[in-house]
Image (tube, rainbow, N blue to C red; front, side):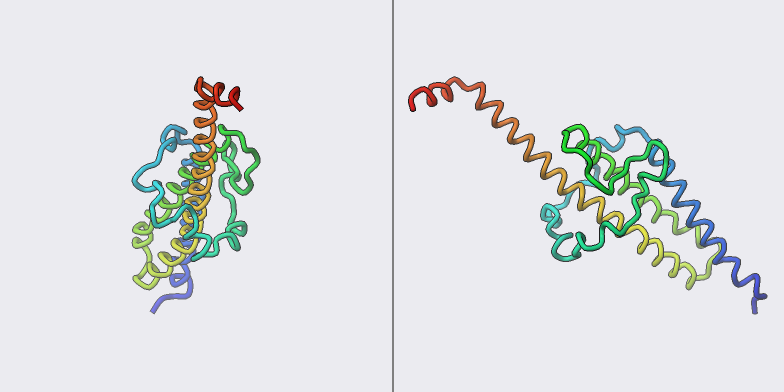
Length: 181
């Protein structure tokens, strides 16, 4: 039915297109303004079913496999490597959280490219591309969410502790209570 070269053309187009889409999406995302990722959105907001990251740890065993995924943030100049937490400074932690939002949006965006592949693929080819897109992007989305939920918990605790210590330091009765001992 197809000549040998015709049958392989869609797969060649798939491979080239997937590579271009992934690299372009990452390159564009790195250049978007930080303010776009400064706050949670309907897509990136933590959900109660995530249980502060426990869903990912217990059900998905994410700690066992998350380090095996590539860190695309470090591939481009201006990108942010998220493979390792390199500081505990509040500014760094806030940037890390922001970059997990950027990464999550990027991977969701890559999934949106699926209809493009309908231009040259049969339904069977579309199913294969869809499975590949989900398999390549869903684990990355899950890791972004897992890291963000955990970091937000740490940042939130730190802010609560600093706030509590700051209030206690300014309250006159704390000095009286210390003097009465």
